[in-house]
Length: 200
Image (cartoon, rainbow, N blue to C red):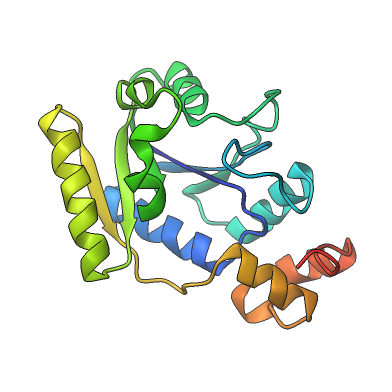
């Protein structure tokens, strides 16, 4: 079995997240892709809405896709959401699976500065999203070569998706014009719970 891990703030989840996840699942041949909102991201000062709302939005965003599986595993832990703990928990639950940790190019390029990166590499392969920019590709190739010299597998996933950040999404939501960038039903949830209006 091949299992992917795709974590993040998902504040809010948007079609770029879902498109990236679906492309990666297909490219890597994943049987399951765990979509995991961080309860308390260690690299950010905080999230704009609660973890519970972000998980609920993610469940709506993933819809009935049989591979994408929203998970509350980081929400059930106390303290900062460190990736190495998540990877080790997935490995413990699935000792025989091939595990891929998905991340954006910026996160990949700073990966060696994360907390306990060696513990992540002991349990999982890395899969990095690449948008195709020449400079980005060169930096990714250098980091990939460095890690592969150490015996680790790094897969590059071409990432031809809608390019929009969560910050841009929150601004659009504040002006009630974000629906085209949201998966079906998520906009209704956001309006029902009055999320983001004052937080852009």
